[in-house]
Length: 250
Image (cartoon, rainbow, N blue to C red; front, side):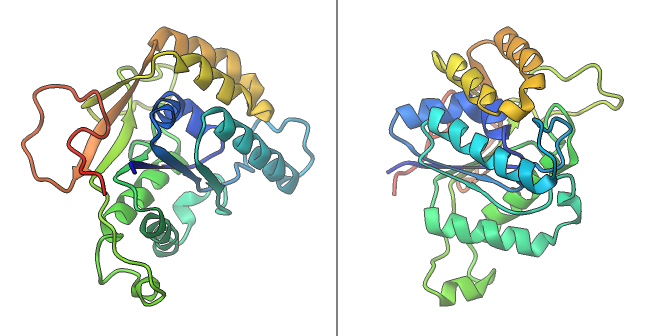
C-alpha cells in the first residue's frame, strides 16, 4: 500500500497548498493522512464566532468537510496555538509527528516550504521545520525511545517534499525565496475539487475570490521541491511528475 503524509499549519492549508495533489493520489488509491498542527483560532476571518474556542470548533468541522471532498483517508487537527508555532516546544511537536510517522509509515511526506510558503507565514515555516526533523528522526533508534518501548518501530519515509510555486506574491512587504521546483504534479480535473475544498472553509470565505482566481491562473498543476530522499543521488536534470517515482512499496 502506498501512503502519503501531509503536515500543515492551519485548516485550509490542506486545500490551498496540496488539495489537487491529495485528491489526485487519493483517486489513485494511495492512503492519505493530513496532520494540521493548529485549529486556526487566530485567523482574522472569524465567520461570526465570538471566541477562539468557538472558531476552533468551527474550523475543525470545516477541515473535516474539506478532507472528505479531497478523499483523504485520515485527517487530524492537533491543539498547538495558531500564530505561535515559533514558540511551541520544538522537541514536543516533533515527538508528536514522529509518533504518527511511525504509526502510519508513509513512503512520502509533504509539508510547506521553510520560507513560509508564498505568504511567508511564520507558522508555515515552523510546520516545515517540525516536519523535516520528524521525517529524519522517525527512522532513528536514538530518538523518542519511549515510543519504541511501547512497541512502535523506527520508520524511514523515502522522500520529503516542500510545497513550492513558480511565482511569489508581489504585494508582500518582504520578498520570499521559494525552493526550486523539482516536481510538477498534474492535478487534472481536481482543480475544481481543490476550489470546492477551500470553499468548505466557510469561515475563511472572504479569501475565496482571490484564492480561486490565483488557482485558475496557475492551472492544473501543483509544484514541489524534493528536499530529502533515502537514496543518495545527483540533482535530477529532468522534472519529476510523480511523488512516488523511485519509491519501493512496503
